[in-house]
Length: 147
Image 1: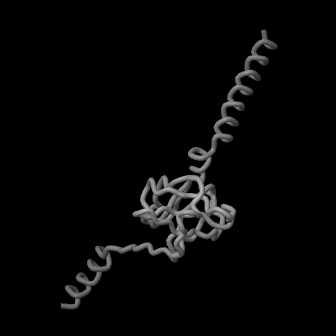
Image 2: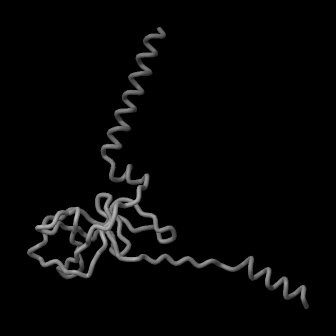
Image 3: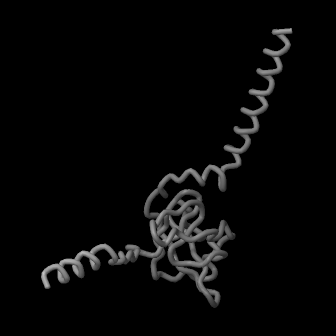
């Protein structure tokens, strides 16, 4: 009887599944490397400036990691707008359904992710092309010297 009980306990401990649920402290959007906490404060239509960006991806549901213009609360394609009279370093407006905008206030810098270099990094791409050309020219010069 003790052996059966021990085997049952061991089998439960081996086959137990882990449950992972990610919960966020607040709804946020990321724009140009800055994290903005979305508040419940509505922004009036006459205060909405030009469109400045949109949600392009969602955070990873298991790890919580994200890069680029992401949001944990809004779907891809949700637009960001300037708020007239407020700098974008302080706050932006996030589009809601039905001509409604919510104020999102600056919270912190977004964590570095290497994918930012590839997705938002035109200067990075230019640098890579420049380095490839420089490498090719150096090889060409060395090859000509060895002739």
